[in-house]
Image 1 (tube, rainbow, N blue to C red):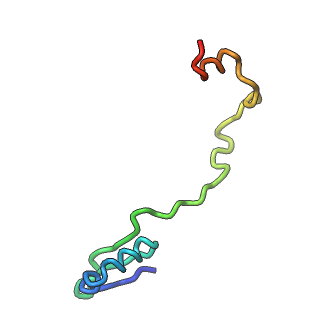
Image 2: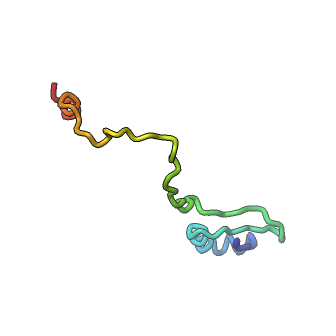
Image 3: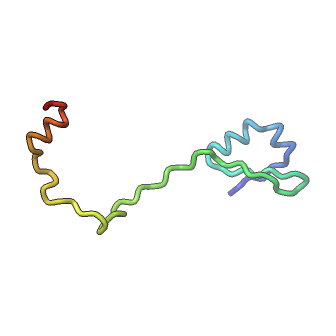
Length: 80
């Protein structure tokens, strides 16, 4: 839920209000009782990861874990 503060209070307690916004709370700033601005956190909270989002879209080959050819290993290691 958002906190509503008047502009005078926002100027007086700006540091406290910014801390509230950084903690995830929305702060609405009102002027003469009319809402004019919203202060929100810059960084949003990370969304939980959903596993299985690519299910059915990709296929892992049967030989995925098979050892690499000697030529491929040499190329990765920078050998000719």
